[in-house]
Every structure is written in structure tokens, then in C-alpha cells.
Image 1 (spheres, rainbow, N blue to C red):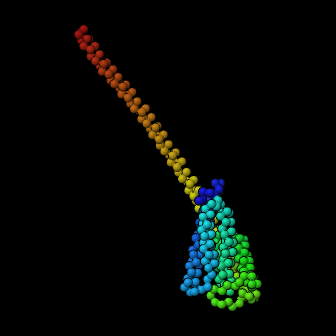
Image 2 (image 1 turned 90 degrees about the vertical axis):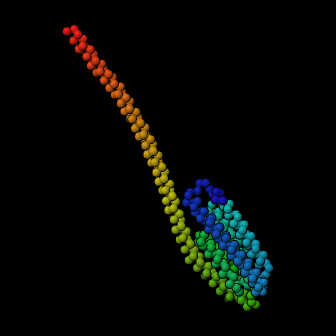
Image 3 (image 1 turned 60 degrees about the horizontal axis):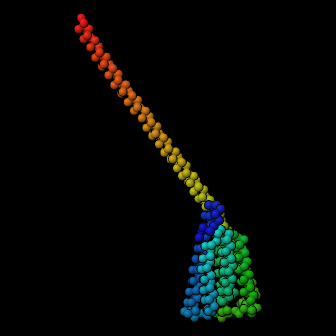
Length: 286
């Protein structure tokens, strides 16, 4: 699945893409787990505690899970980190929209459902830049304000899930405090958790760069060692050939000396024999 990346990408970009890909995969898995957990909690609340959980909420959670299963499939075809993060960013916007609908069916501004926006923003802060997380924050606040206004104006009927409504959803002051508190919480997450995540990403990039440099140095060292080993091997073979040639020359010289020695000794023996014969002849002539 990672073979679809650009062939001209650097080793650092490849490593960063792989790490980012794993991070998005883990985010999708975690979201699926959370959605399944909410689905089970909704079942317990409706059938065990007899809470008035609407059937459409189960449908919404089920569709949300199917949507994330499709996300898990489609990210395999992303070619680079920009495509991957843009796709995941769009998914987070869809998550905010679906979560707003869930909040509506769980009691709207009279319940703590809006706190779950923080989960989306916290996960987004670990992957996206502050600018994109701030944009998600504005989108979440916009959706929440729209929900509050639609319930306040009676365009959307207010939903009660646990207790009878206190009517706070019709109080503009209460809504303003809710939106202000939520905005402060969002900005706190962006400023602190986002800054921490950004520093971690920078340090991670430095570590990846150092790791790649170490790998490159290791590869260069291996190439040099292989070249030196080959050179020594060739030198050894050359020395062996020189030794063989020298040994052959010495052997030939020894053989020549042996032949010369045999000839010289044979000549001396012949001279001695001739001298003896001459001496015998001289003695006979006398």
C-alpha cells in the first residue's frame, strides 16, 4: 500500500509518510473502538436503564462506523503525506458534523455531549498544524452554535434523554456561557496540546533525519569495507600469482643448475678418466 508514493521522494519523506500513515491508521482504529463503545453504551442505556435513546441514534452510530471502515480502506491509496492529511482533515470535519447530530439527540446544550468535540480536536492536534486545528475548532463552535440556535428558535425540537428538560436551552445567557466555556476549552487544547504535539513532531523529524544519516553513513561504510575487502582479495590473489611465478623461476633455475652440475661433474670424471688412460699409455711407452 505504500508503493503508491512518488518514486522521487527522499528517504526522509518516505519515513515520515510511513509514520504518518501509521498514525492515521491508529486514529481510525481508536475512533472505531470509541464508536463501538458508544453503540454498546446506548444499547445498555435503552434496554437496561430504560433511557429514551432514539432509534435514529443507533442508525447514526452504525453509519459512522461504516464510514470509518471505508476511511481505513481508502487511506491505502493515498500517494503522499499531503493527500493523506487532507483526506483525514476532511474526515474530521465529517466527524464534527456527525457528533453535532449525536449531541442534539443526547440533550443538546443541556448535556455534556459537547465535551466530545475535545476528543476530535485532541487527536487532530497530534497530526495537523495549529492552523488546521484552529479551523476545526471554529467549525466545531459554528456547528454547536447552530445547534443551540436551532433549538432556541424551535426549528429543531429539543431532545430529552435522561431527565425532563430544565428549559436552559431556551436561555440565551446559558447558551452564551456554554459556548464561551467550550471555546476557552478548545483554545486551551490547541495552545497547549497542539504546541506539545508540534514540538514532538519537530523532534521526531530530527530523529528521523539523524536515523537516515546514520543509515546512509552505515551504507557508505559497508561499501567502503566491501571495496577494501575486494582490493585486499585482489592483492592477495596477485601476490599468490607473483609467488607462483617466482617459485616457478627458482625451480627452473634449480633444474638448470642441476643439469649444469651433472654436465660439469660428468666432464670432470671424463677428464680424470682420460688422465688415467694417458698416464697408462705413458707408462707403456717407457
